[in-house]
Image (cartoon, rainbow, N blue to C red; front, side, top):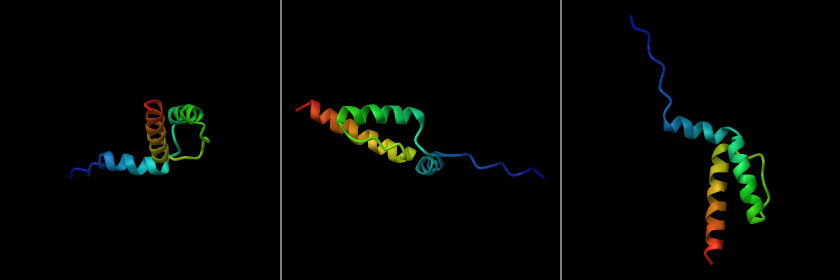
Length: 68
């Protein structure tokens, strides 16, 4: 009898893990820099998913401000 193979982690698994995992060091560095540029407070307690969203928001905001 062939043993069952473990499920392959897919994109959905990565999204779920990102929702629960703390942001990465790279995300924290980028977010800290963006917060400084935007004069916004830096929150060190974000998850990976929250950090991705905040990075996108700040990037959009800073790009919009520079194009005025």
